Amino acid sequence: MTAPDRTSAPAIEFDGVTFTYAGGTRALDGLDLRIEPGETVAIVGQNGSGKSTLVKHLNGLLRPDSGRVLLDGRDVRPVHAARLAALAGLAFQNPDRQLFAGNVRSEVEFGPRNLGVRGRDLDARVGAALEAVGLAGELETNAYDMGYSRRKLLAIASVLAMRTPILILDEPTTGQDARGVALVGGLVEAAAAEGRTVIAVSHDMRFAAERFGRVVVMRAGRVVVDGTPAEVFAEKRWPELRAANLEPPLPAVAGARLGLGSTPTDAALVAAVRARNR
Amino acid sequence: MSLDLAAVRYRYAGSMSVALGPLDLSLEPGQVVGVAGANESGKTTLCLAASGMAPAVVGGHLDGAVEIDGVAASTLRPHELAQRCGLLFQRAATQLTHTTATVFEEVGFGPCNLSLARDDVVARVWWALAALGIEDLAPRDPTRLSGGQGQLVALAAVLALRPKYLILDEPTSELDPAGTGLVADGLVRAARETGAGILLVEHKTDVLARIADRMIVLDRGGVALAGPAAAVLGDDRLVELGVEPPARVRLARDLRAAGLDLTPDLAGALE
Image (cartoon, rainbow over all chains, first blue to last red):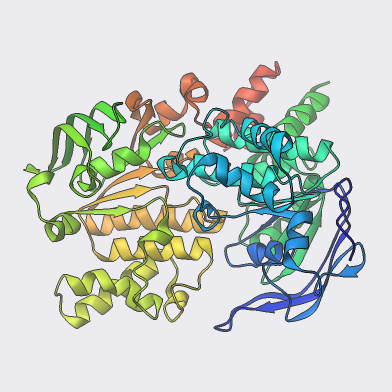
């Protein structure tokens, strides 16, 4: 594989991927999934359904037992993890498994430094990433003096600074207050506007419905529902959602009760009610 | 009988600024008191102070009084404190002992240390696992659980101690909606069956709407709103305090803001 093209994201394909952890837990079970460049995809599913395992296959942290993970049609198995890391940046579910440096600056510098970025370009990237997560001015702060929610934002910033064509966020809204959730949603949309592929694992159905073009529902290591938020949260899909231990968001439920079709977001429900009243 | 904080102010070690307070709070057995607030508003610090961890374990300086059933928390020894007041950390994974081979042993670790009879320990472990609907995890290796499963196991370990007061710092943060529902129901059941008083820090206001009796909203370490949960969750100031209102409140507000009357059919659809 040649040096990664930083300007465009590769298409991602999981082809019959199976992965079993030492100890026997089968996390992925013949997973098939294709993600086109520039898509925004929320991966939802119950705890233990394989969501985090899936995304760890994208940056080389895990390798399939069988089946293949392909980027632009090429198997990633022989590709060195450092190469994959330049293509796909992953912000961990638990920031404490990701953060290690003494202060905020060295934490955020680490990724781009490994990509060969130095000097002013490095400073600019670090500054922009911290600005994006609302941590500008915290350069010299010790990460462990920050509360959990800010450490989580710091972990996201350190991945943003790598400017990878594929951005992966594992439960980015966990522990965030209303402003934090809105901030992370804005990051997703900004990355998408730059043509990057954004993949987020989430338990927050509202976040998935409002900020992503596509929702993928996982259950027991496979994809069971896949489509736009309006398709996935439509009433006819509820039995499958509930079998995957998920509940449709309230506006979807209210829209269905009122016979207004699939209204997965507050905005969609308001629009549908307005159209009905007209 | 109650857990009381009176005129509490707390500073972390090495910090000049007050992280919490001045604050008064009372938690009675059988009652669920919800705590919401923006990030860095003092929620975790409140958990540390109310459970006696701050300053005893984490250092810092506390003014005012924290009393558990009339006894100053600062005078209780760690094992006495643990039986009165159970604390679930925000990072549940940091709470696992990493000394046990199975979830069953992990949840039994605390009760074993209370020198209970073996049958008693076993009964408590099954009760705690059942309260959260995770009996099937009993034989699993506690270090090989998903984030959400680990969180449920850590909560079960706290429940198994059957403390009189439970201080829970975002117990559902990594849980799927079904797991969140299980925890909410499990807490209500635990409060009813053991008479425990529960202080519940939670960003998910839908959970608070479902189970909290009373609520406070923190802002910069102080109490910005307090009262019956339904009243606090319907308060217009919630958003500016960085707290997401429950979905029903938010949707009703969105509809009204769009100039749409909340007719009975609409209101009914939001129930």
